[in-house]
Amino acid sequence: MELETLSPNPEKGAETPQPKKVFVKTYGCQMNVYDSQRMTDALAADGYAETNVIEDADLVLLNTCHIREKAAEKVYSELGRIRELKNEKAAEGREMLIGVAGCVAQAEGREIIRRAPAVDLVIGPQTYHRLPDVLARVRNGGRVVETEYALEDKFEHLPQPKRAQVAKRGVAAFLTVQEGCDKFCTFCVVPYTRGSEVSRPVAQILAEAERLAEAGVREVTLLGQNVNAWHGEGPDGAEWGLGRLLYRLAEIPGIARLRYTTSHPRDMDDELIAAHRDLPTLMPYLHLPVQSGSDRILKAMNRRHKAEDYLRLIERVRAARSDIAMSGDFIVGFPGETDADFEDTMRLVREVGYASAFSFKYSPRPGTPGAEMDDHVPEQLKDERLHTLQALLVEQQQAFTASMVGRTMTTLIEKPGRQAGQKVGRSPWLQPVIVDEKVGEIGDIIEVRITRPGFNSLYAEPI
Ligand code: 5AD
Ligand code: SF4
Image (cartoon, rainbow, N blue to C red; front, top):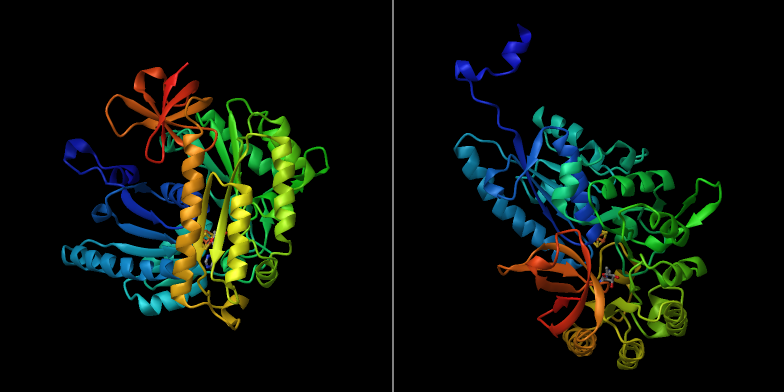
């Protein structure tokens, strides 16, 4: 009889209980995208379905980024808007919980509760596996801040996504293998928000990659703040680095493409470079941030290498894989940066030739050594330098795109195109490739010839 009261009987006219709904908004890096997926999986096990419509949500989660100033401010203004929504729903007698996750949550903690009265929970990146428990505590009354670094391994406690869920997310997937950072670049907040460097064990990574492959994933991007610092004990008892891990992942049936991001120049070892030479599965694209081309600034940033080391490293990578495309990150206007230092950065960019790159104005992050330094660069000068650098980077990117016309390459078909009759794939160099929808199914890898460049994309025909 107990059962009957639990399961509503349609014949008696009872309504089927609607699952609770969660709306997740993700800011920042790819790791946050991955984390949002894993949080959604954890919430699915707790009875929450995902929604893209914020108005329908019983729980709104903002997965935040703290890397630059405006990111946190955007979160606070977004919270202001969501608060109004929450009040409207409350007037209708419906509850909407608001949670802040991610790096702003970790860095600001209780401050969020103080500044944003509508927030019910604050949860840091190392405690996502406790989300269902945190929600239970919120429902028992009270606002919860959960930002202590957990002693247990969150990945051991997070449920794996269901096969259908993985398939819904597409044929290219992220997989975090390493998290946190011990390098303490003087501009960077990551060691404080993501904690110290941790590598996931080999068996855990292989199991997750195999699950992804079984669900139809063809391309896996390994993620880590210092992904090439990843290390672990292999099944052979030997110490493995990222290179060795890539060789092993390349053996998994179904996985046709591998990538990894973000790397630090100091952790590019011989085996990883050899993997670029030996593994056709490893895509010829390397995101290797240098931040500055000036040795003086590199030293002040605590990067612990010189511009020349970086250039020689790229030579070695290119010797291993001649068609590799380079990508990077740059910061202009770090404290003490002179015109001559900035010129060194411009020179380095000209020497490398980037296929794509991200460039930012230095933004002092509270608690980092850079913020305490003298000689901050005036905002206007930062603007000018950023403008000059970006003009060069855009020119290089366009030249790279133009050089693709007439070339043949593989393309992984990922999704329907924006226009009817088209599908969009991805080139080995991460460019969207637009093809006729009839050339193949999503998940297929086909040979194409590039016919013309589009806006940030390439048009292609099958061979
Ligand atoms: N100011 C500006 N840019 C920054 N980055 C990291 N911290 C800062 C900061 N304080 C940039 C770096 C890094 C990328 C993810 O963000 O270029 O590689
Ligand atoms: Fe932003 Fe860094 Fe956190 Fe990613 S790890 S969300 S880039 S602060």
